[in-house]
Image (tube, rainbow, N blue to C red):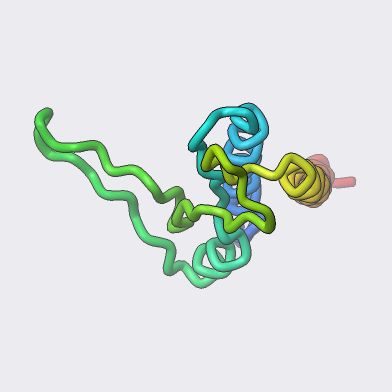
Length: 132
């Protein structure tokens, strides 16, 4: 009986990629908290993971010639969205550091949880291979 690696990890692989991308966006927000006019960005993680789990995540657009504009704004079907601030800044910056830190911390904890789940699955496969 053959077992596909994709079936072993399931949606956890996609979750790790999405959580990694979200960590990048949130850290960019924090790094630009004092940049006038900077707009805080995020992804709808739940919607992106749901589409990845259903196999309906959009494939990224591909360029066929060097003069084509590079597509931006999506990652694994997760559209980059702008965060609506609770208290907008006078300089147009929409980053609220306390919100970004809370989101970054939650995302980091979820990433670690996903990593532990995948590690457990790998250890189970290694045990099966060794015949333990």
